[in-house]
Length: 383
Image (cartoon, rainbow, N blue to C red):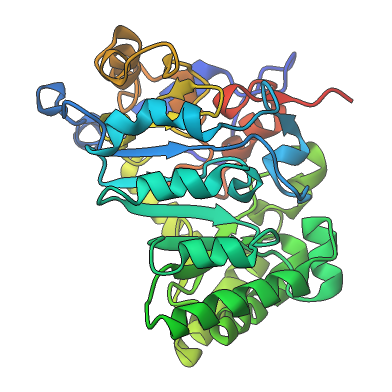
């Protein structure tokens, strides 16, 4: 399958949907048939076993690489504890819940009572944060109870943190994480298991090993998860891996070796560049996805989506029952278009965050740069 020449619509400079579909169907038949097998609806559980929920549509930072620097939510809001209780019947069925998908969890005023309610049930819990608002009260509530915590840090010097994250708050985050880990030691608990996530760009490759040192210094048991830059605006396009694959590959290889040397976990999301290309060729354009058969994605205004990276609303949990949404026609139709390359949803066709999306393929990034309609009802900011 030719992954280098991509014909774009000259009027829009976007890749036509049929072109992307054909790229999926060009793989050998035996691989394609294996690729489009999907979970059988007869085995669909009566309720989701996982959900993610954004408790707020706000963030206290504006990182230069983040979708929030280019898009804004349908409305600026946050969910109250009383409104959250509409989901309590679902909690008893969940195995896991993420209190994060697109915004900053710690900006929700009712985070702690909501978290207390969730902790009444045997559920694995997780969220990601920039760590700036990690107060003593929040630390006390999380330690020993939250299962996993990811802290986003891109820039491990004062200047690079300001450049990437937009504010001079690196030392604040460092101090907050030191308090969190001290409280874990005091209570003799491993929870929350801590991970650092960082965005890899052409102009910060020399900091990868420094991020690993940072993770070791603060005691991040889950190490470092590195994500490749996905550009949400044309001004970031020159910083993606395709701009200098050799330089990226060399830096990541050095980081992998250094992580092994100092005993820190290191996960490049999607694998090293060569690994990612091989997986993309073997699997086709996307990895087989089971997310819409396992969970739902909630917004603080009650809107419900099939997954966190979808823009196809399937209900509102303030107005509709979870049972009606889970077994409803909208989600049934969406599931039918998840893994079949000849009948694929637009959301799935353009899923730029799929683990096995080909990182060096310019088509992987085109949609994110050009689309005005974004995840969870977000819209591109008007200049």
